[in-house]
Image (tube, rainbow over all chains, first blue to last red; front, side, top):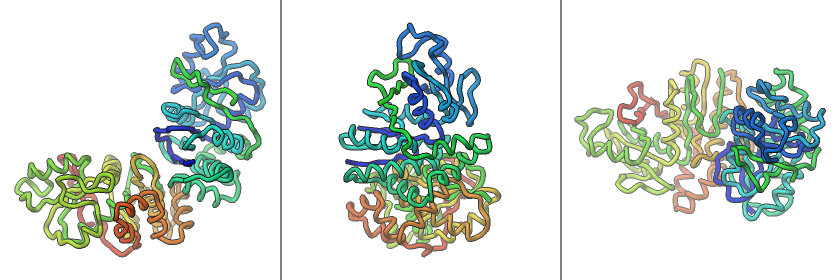
Length: 249
Length: 249
């Protein structure tokens, strides 16, 4: 098995891909499904998310009531006008989404998922909260390569995503032999040199920004390793309208 | 002073930029100038390098004899058909380039220099060989930010460039206070966890490829820190014909 870490989304994934945007998109995505959502639709733009609801289009079919469709996302860490929720795992964790379809768009994470899905045969969303389960699932699905894709922040590498990739690498390497690339070596080095997950996430540039925005509770929530066994998995029947559909794997 | 490391070329550089492609473009560039070359022209494509010579165009003016213009570069680590030299610092170090103009094009390094020069006010080429001198020069030139740009390899991060960026960060931080970003923290961590420069370079994916191509001597040559005080600097009169002109700083 080959184990590859892209410190930024690159593309060209022949096999299984774990997408990481730990602060906060892939953490929040898992919480939506934990709290009962039927599926997540990740769009490539906020406009597309608004259109999906207003037109009643979504992967559940045209009969879906728009009342069952909720929008979550952020730009610059803040909620998007017209959306129902921000990109906060703490906020999502306080809700009941049973039977709902959540349409998500965020600054970096949903774009990284689209890069992954363009070629990846199997695409999973990973965070610290579901790290062990995501690694186990990827190992079970992969044929020859597991790629971990760090979403980064506006085209630049993020410490918190690379730290999380390092945690995933450690779990994956404990499950069997793997040939690792430069990116995986860097992620493992970063992971082994951080004292703990909360220190890594809260000291990252994005962690500091979120704390300044009053969202420090989201950082703390996102820093709890393997608290969840739920792994969002890209559904085989993917998008029709420019959205990727993730369901509980 | 802000200290920023881009693990891959990103753009948007307001101030001073150090471009790193330690295996081998920025190492070789320094050797060309050390061995007497009058200037280096970094082109955006191999075709442009061949055109520059055949048309007699270069920054020294139309009167330049094409005999004074030599081409160096590589694709996939190997010399380019029609070029005079590969991208080998060892090969360059055995030559006398007094009075010559060298036109360079390589897979990653020359492209990274073009990204840096698109916005950077001052652009320097850095390697392990000139690390101390390059850091000192950048510190003297910079007003508010020093950005270190890792060229990477075909759009993916390279261990050897990030290690070199970590060495540059250590030198820069020893010269005075600096606020560092996530990329600089990652580079410093990678640098501090490698036993020595040769181990870092020779164990990187690209170092392994070069050794397999019989170019292990280039890897060893590139791994000698601060052996040179020569820093290639982007000339103020930059390109006219799509080439960047670097001279001894």
